[in-house]
Length: 227
Ligand SMILES: C[S@@+](CC[C@H](N)C(=O)[O-])C[C@H]1O[C@@H](n2cnc3c(N)ncnc32)[C@H](O)[C@@H]1O
Image (cartoon, rainbow, N blue to C red; front, side, top):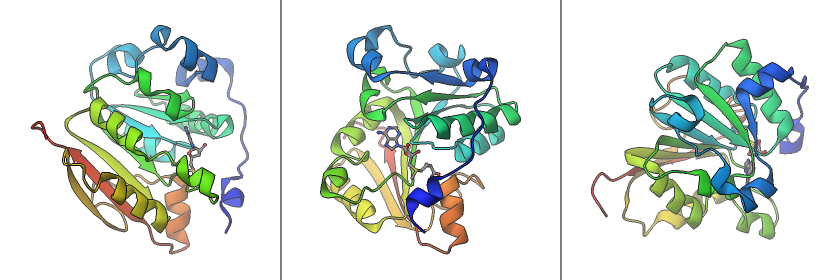
């Protein structure tokens, strides 16, 4: 089934109060010209506490992150996506579950790097990122050398960067990107990482599983020693 069709969903615009509670929309202009006045992606600035923080990039409709947030009230979660309708769906899910430890940010993640603080995240999740069909899109994939470097900077020692994709070419490209990178413990395989996120599934993950489609995963753990 084409991705576009999978991506279609009916969405209700959430009320103002719910939107204020769960969504921070950052325009490209603000991110480009005034990143210093925007809140850092850290537990203290976004949640007013010092709980560990996990980030999902391209969170879509937020099912995966809302599941994690419900299972782990002792952890904060931030989901970033540039698609407003998907985030409305994510907000609906979060408010329906009355979650207090989750926030969604509307932005293109490639412009969000200045908001990441050093050693502030315990995990970064990238699930079923858009592979892009054209060569130009392939070159603009989220999982890039810059992405890996920024993730390394933002993760605490022992923190994890987890990629799951149904696209074998994306997976191979990701493996090649980190092949020579000695700063991580690297594990990879087919399916999903054993037990790493319990029963939490993203929307695409659930749909691909139902159709019996194979997925590939790569888990990078930031070394505790300088490498
Ligand atoms: C194929 S969907 C997967 C959504 C979700 N992770 C899942 O597994 O169900 C990819 C998502 O990444 C988002 N996305 C793509 N490029 C992005 C970027 N540069 N910054 C933020 N979000 C992005 C899209 O809007 C879309 O919601």
